[in-house]
Image (cartoon, rainbow, N blue to C red; front, side, top):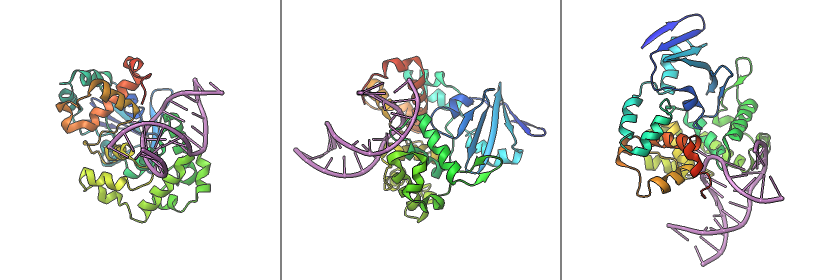
Length: 283
DNA sequence: AGCCAGGGTCTGC
DNA sequence: GCAGACCATGGC
């Protein structure tokens, strides 16, 4: 991997199997925004980033090489060999098509706390509104960083709020769930750091002790926040895929990377022409 | 106007 | 264990 660092621009090449649209606009994160020039701006915890792709060159703006090495490289999961994973998943014909449809998709290594709150908000909701609620959450209660950006608010901050204050978010019935999550994390009833070392089932059980966190949201936190490959979030679309394509269970080639397989399948079934046959199906 | 959105809880069999 | 009502809000 080569670097070219100039004034406010860090170029990294070659970077393979990484597409910004497929990775940052596929429903796994909600604080990245696509600009008109196809670049993306996003905020993660208390860091802002602006990035674009030019062929196999990844360009980061306003980021030093040290910040890239110390954070963004891991966040974008750039040390994982996705070519090898896609090869394995492609043993199954449907998955082969899904991988070929979004070959530059990567599973981000996000912060568990942000993912927890984000996917509590996601329940029975659509992606556009999820982004809006999270934007208001950060603008209202997150520390200001730079000109007009806001960090993601800390558990202790949200734990001290009232339901009335959270009402400004217009998150509906989810407000009480956000509050319960913040209180349990802030007072240590749910220890997000300790979850990292727990077996999948135990970590999931801990997460589901939070009101508003069921089977699907817990799996999202485990996959996107802890990079647990056993986690396979089953939303309405994935349930349709399972019943139509895999009534007998997932194929064996998914065993070691079920979570990543889920991500390929989810993006495929929601945005490819295959969607047509699935969108009229009932839950 | 009615349906749906990356679901979960609560109640009643 | 499973079905159904209900939950807030906004876009279509």
